[in-house]
Amino acid sequence: MYINDLVVDFYSHIIGKRLLLLANCDIDSVCTCKILQWLFHCDNILYTLIPIQGIEDMITAFEEHSGEVKYVVLINCGGTIDVIETLRPEEDVVFFILDNHRPTDVCNIYNTQQIRLIAKIEEDEMIPEFDEIFNDDDEDDNDGNESDNSGIDENEEDAEGSENEAGESRVAKRRRLNEEAILKRRERRLWEEKRNRLMFEYTQFTYFGRSSAILIYELAWKLSKDNIDVLWWAIVGITQQFVLGHVPVQKYQDELDSLQLHIGRLCPNIVDNDDTASQHSGSSLSNNPSFNTSLKIISEKDLNLVLYRHWTVEKSLRHSMFLAVRLKLWTIKGEKRLHQLLAEMGLPLAESRQMFSSMDLNLRKEFHGMMEKMAKTHDLDIMFTSFTLHHGFRNRYQATDYVYAMLALFCSAMKDKNHIDCFLDALGCLSRQNKTLLDEGIVKAKMLLTIMYRQVQNSLDMKQVISAGPFLYLVIQEGTLDSRYYSQPICLHMLAQILLRAYVATARRKSAGLPLIISAPFYSIEGTCLVLGVPPLSETIPRNFFGKAFEQAAEKTNSNIEMDYFNTAVIRMKTEDRAKFFDALTALLS
Image (tube, rainbow, N blue to C red):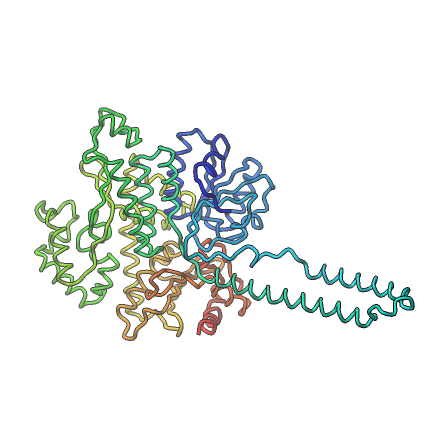
């Protein structure tokens, strides 16, 4: 069931208890965990944190620790499945589910004993009523009772037939009971048809709700335990949804107003190492009088250029999705147009190929204005409202810088790192004391973006994106250069977003209304692959229908697919079954 008050219905219940935290491997989960760790540190709450990648990991982790805890917090996992049916816990175990995946499973919504949903019901969720989807009547039992009653009545009529001539005959009695049974079965069938229709309408699309980090930040604010660091972690969580296109731009804009109010409350114009700064920052660095620092968050109109403060201007322009797609920078004409734009801006090519921090000071100061002027001249939408963290006098990080750095840490293809190590690296990346880890993530992000845009260019040049009629698809074959990076769903999702926009920009016929399916090798030894679907660009609200479509196509082809991820638009399957699976999808969606 949904809870109304985060403090009363959630936090007051877990104070003094030992908790089990199961967190999905994504950036919003990392930010949420970081805020919860701060709150638990303030109130001395014991907890065990286990990062998980899918349903199997969740079952394994719960079974290993179920005997130690009675309170479990699920972060961005568990909301879309029946948790009680999946985990089969003891009756005294309570689950607090904080999941941004939608739609929420109806069994979790209407379970009032063991499930607590930390979320607010959104207007467009259209949750079915309890009576419309749950019915305690058992048709078989009713039919059996009716048959027994019929037999008793028949025996009574045999014994009293001669005495009660005015009573109903046995034939009439049997006919009446049969008619009642038929009517009940008909009502049951109509109810089931309505239930199936309602459930299909409710579950046919998957999408993302409000950021979990924002919800937990509001809890910290109500507890008067928020500070600049906690606010920044919440900002990174909502920025991830914007960067990956999980929510409409309007929802991102709606969150900005409340965040800007919190910034005005926590961040004075200049924050230094006085008592006020120490109180706001919540950091051991600020409490050290020998450490002269400035810490503040600024909300401002900034350039939507990827990592431009930590890269060269030319490469940042090449790898910024909206600009690269608009100018088609992977083509020869796009290359010439880029050089033309740099010339119009008055930015020498030699300067644009230096690190931004090493450029001429005057050019750095004028760069923002030059880009704005160029954007207005060529009608380029490269400005957006963002947040910048000023730490010290040289360290300036945009919220998107953190997002790309953490994405790269999650997409690490090193064999000596599993998903738990990647999660902990991303968690450590949020600490200002671990600046080295953040810089390492930024370096990996630049390499990852270079690999992705090279893959996009190769796929378009070699015409590997195929139109199957109702959808587009791309298959990254085993042995393709850098294909190992795409064995992570979050990395494959980024590639799919960029590739779909690039294809629509270059296609001769209109294809903005077509979704994209992309497949990449997962584990070559077992012969498995990942299949991921993204919605078409024409959708103003990013709702994905591939979860249900994958399930139905697998049933028709008897393909053995693994729907282990909490995002149902991502599946694993045998590579040998992929061709017939795509054929079934084509027939299903046509």
